Length: 98
View 1 (tube, rainbow, N blue to C red):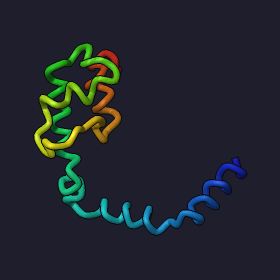
View 2 (view 1 turned 120 degrees about the vertical axis):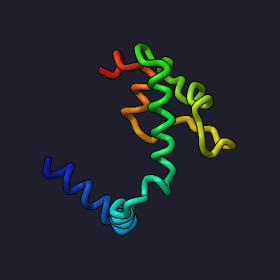
View 3 (view 1 turned 90 degrees about the vertical axis):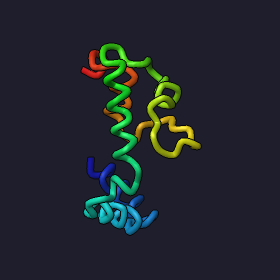
């Protein structure tokens, strides 16, 4: 365990820890998730889950199924939900998620 933690620390120091820390500092700002565009994306995923509540749309189909619910960046293909829990629930439904 000590070797793994030491390896992670050495790697973090090698790549530089400042970019990681500055990213976490942004989370303190209240509108970070809204500006980043994640909250609208998550809201659209909740609507997808409401429309396919029991079995979802099928594993690996998020990108295709989400096109109907995408409300921002319509010129972009969103293939992941940026929230593993919501994406998994939309693909497998509530039963699969549980």
